[in-house]
Image (cartoon, rainbow, N blue to C red; front, side, top):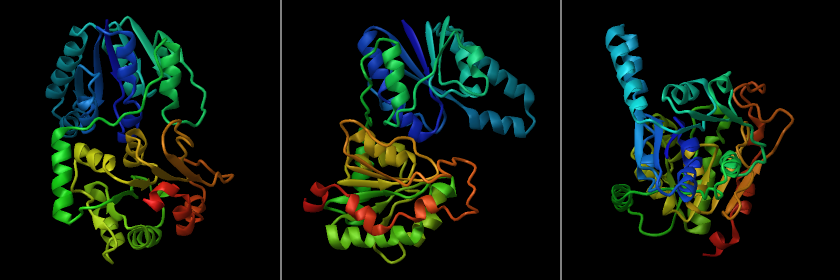
Length: 339
């Protein structure tokens, strides 16, 4: 049995799909399980012990060739990639993303059985079987329903770590002078309507350090450095934004006493790792519970929410600004407070 999972992006979604390979392996012990992922997100599938092969779609390179009008080179690259994919002779391909771009790869890989999970953008027409999953607002719910439909055990969330990631995380903590317990803070996303105010993060960081004895670490990408610098300007938090790759960030999250974040991949990492996690959701709400995991979600559920990519509040974002620092501190699990 040769199985292809197509989950191209983004980081949080790759995290939530992480339990699927092990569930497939439990049923198909001798299967060859491959994961097709977009470049930049391959670190977690590569560290997953149930994944035999990671196939990286070089989307950035192809886009550059198109922008430079090197169409012949682009066509040869695409043709070679598709041919190599088909040579693997997959029996089953699973579109775990439900978009046209992911469904195209499922179709092009040549698998006889093509399963689309919650397909959108017309992608269901490229599948031999479509699975519509109910929205029950639990962590990685669609993969639980997928596993049930395929007769697999329920996927268990996991955050695979690497030795290099652990070593890099340890070095960063040493350089920052962090020797005790710390809280990993994930304030940043690519959408402002998913953000909690920077002033609130500054106040929260100061109180985590002063009242709970937890050193706050700000995690994020290079693009988040200006905002992280503003949050950490008073010295209440240690700014690590842009200083970690995915394996290093995963190790830092897994070693935290507490994770607090908005709807972003780093927050989902905390849930997958089993670290006590406090999620602040507003314009989106991917889940409200994670059975067996120490998760607390603060979500107002206003009439306009979830607005996703089409906010109607003219930048006011009351779904998140209404959440106060005191409310966040009260939501922290008692065992964290008393540790």
